[in-house]
Image (cartoon, rainbow, N blue to C red; front, side, top):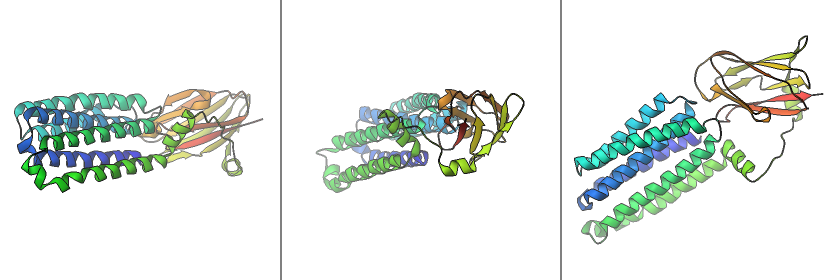
Length: 295
């Protein structure tokens, strides 16, 4: 959800800034145009690279290519009406922002990607507001500003609405709420309820270990809940029949275990030393399941 919102945010604000720049091009200096081209292309490519780096679960090549190309195109479009120097400035900033964004996405995809996207979106909005303020500042006292002052004033409520939508989206995005809950020190343990107990699959007891198979599918895990016995070694086979996606990364916080899942069989071994519920989830925490450890 938050990634779709981020792409929409990029599209809407970038188009709006390009439109505002072209509308005011007769009144902007070359230095101002260079700053606008650099700021917009860098922030747009940075945000695109971060999103793709997270969504593609650690893949670096595709996020770099798409984010860099996006930034270069936007930088060239903004700088083109002014000078070749302004276009070149935008191109170079797009390259830099795309590379940094892709690396950032790869680094955070296994930690708190939702929180990082919220932070990146907020920075993007702030920079776009400042860019529009810069354009309006250049228009002060000009005939263009006098004739279109009402239009210029529309940017404030427009950006306030976008910011409000971002906050509302974040409040309903589960990984973000988990992030802030942990940040505030809420360490409440998750306990198995009656429905979880009922739907859990019992691991098969072998001679000296217990074993279960969990299918990693496009939209989650099957089964989602597995019961095991405390003190007996566990072998969990996470069988994945596709490549890519956030389900290519597995994390079990209680065991301090992180593993990249490839197509095929992926074996996870551990010995539970106390009863409780261990939660496993994908790279973006969109899908999860539980290992219920019993006496």
